[in-house]
Image 1 (cartoon, helix red, strand yellow):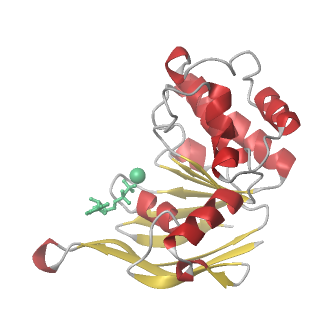
Image 2 (cartoon, rainbow, N blue to C red; image 1 turned 90 degrees about the vertical axis):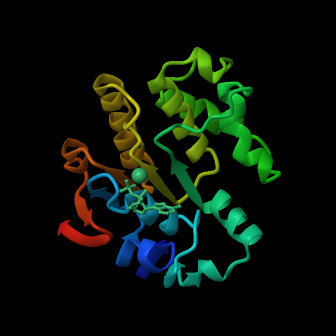
Length: 223
Ligand code: ADP
Ligand code: MG
């Protein structure tokens, strides 16, 4: 799979209050790439990740997945595309509080009217050290465990690419380290593309390919 972003821009507001959150960002992501994008707060990291994953639409620019222009899809088609092909991990976990860990993980499949894949669930739970936590509610889990549930939820549909927006931003350094170790392990084992956004240089260094974003301008740091 190849994801190609071509001069993606996002502007908020009008006139004097206008903010250029992202300024003509171009990027190619190949199958199996692990890319980190580092930048300070307010530099446009989340904006970029939301555009790359079809969670939002740009003011201008193009995005293709294997040549398919995804912003041409209607909102409902885009949501279905996202559910099937993309995994997204949020800084704030975004688990539903009334559902157990297992129900949260399975939710993307239910929304897509797909059959629960019990074997894949068990494999993911083992990879993420969640085996004995699946029947718990989110508030009964630590932050690190909640984020691991969120990672399993992102992977349950077998997406080709995973986007993570400051996945350790709400965790202490120990559980943040565990989450990153597991994400790396999953990337190595499963051969997915992984794009991690961070303001932490230690996390950025884990990726073979690194980019930086400052004031909405994206640049390659190393490859
Ligand atoms: P980061 O994730 O790097 O902290 P963001 O992508 O969230 O940065 O934001 C980039 C810039 O765009 C910031 O100046 C932010 O205030 C602005 N911004 C983000 N979302 C909105 C919005 N919905 N309305 C107005 N401005 C926004
Ligand atoms: Mg952000």
